[in-house]
Image (cartoon, rainbow, N blue to C red):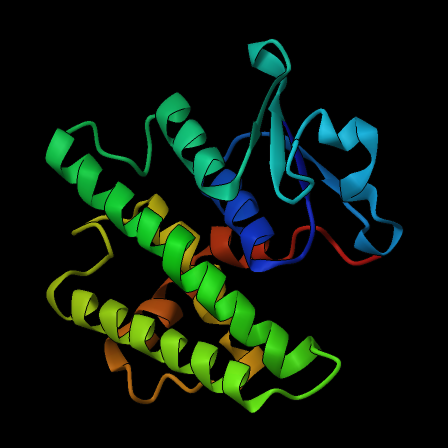
Length: 205
């Protein structure tokens, strides 16, 4: 049994989509940001960084795993899915996972913040992060022109990590019309039952 601590953010959806794709039992513990639950001492014992998501593997001695990319790798290795055992293929998947972790997520996250949530409008910050998000999308577009999925011919943790962020582009009103391959990829993955269900976790009360 996996215990999932999460909230309805792109990073949180990575873990729930992965768990749904694996088809394994898990229990959801929603984290309430408005109450700063992610900063409470009990949660910091699970995730020292005070962010979501995190998991606890009850079948492995209550083993905690934090950071969304690390969670995906841990689950892929444990259950033998979505991460090839071939060294080259595995490396490709991890490269694209790191591209999301170090590029798409942080840059688009900043774009989302300055466009949607910042208390004052700062054109320089908006332009900087929206333009960088577009550049990163161009990298994804180029990759998907040559490959069905980010890591090759099969779905991998790289796709699972990246899709929720592309889906969240609506925060910055970014159209995918200039990225037809990326748009087709997003729509294809978005039609998968596990992606649909995983995106609804945690359920709104």
